[in-house]
Image (cartoon, rainbow, N blue to C red; front, side, top):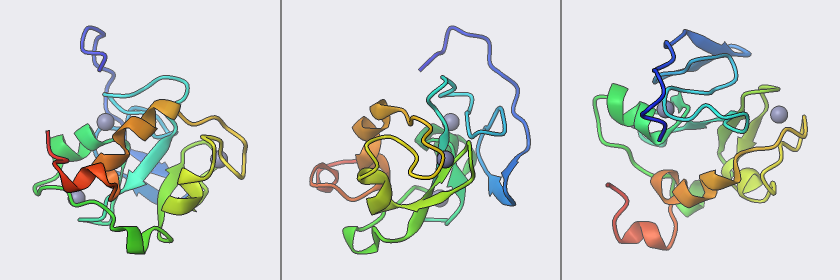
Length: 130
Ligand SMILES: [Zn+2]
Ligand SMILES: [Zn+2]
Ligand SMILES: [Zn+2]
């Protein structure tokens, strides 16, 4: 987390009519927590079915604890490419090789370290809340 940098101001973000909740700072789903060139996806949370740029955005602005997508629902469209506005299903995203299948933009490969915060994984059975 880039805590040393001055915080970018939160903007109202809407991509192709889809509202981005949390603390977005641009129109490509970057947020106050993650805003490198590669941070261009938002994730729809299973609990509230709203798109947030990251887990911290949900934690700081939602009034409830998050739930993860169960494997049985991995065909739900829950990943938004901030560059072209395409919605991917969770399995499409996990098989995308960190590249948008539509616009070929590169996604942050580091996101895979956080899958357990959003999706059911074998580890998430243990403990997904920090
Ligand atoms: Zn939620
Ligand atoms: Zn965030
Ligand atoms: Zn795209």
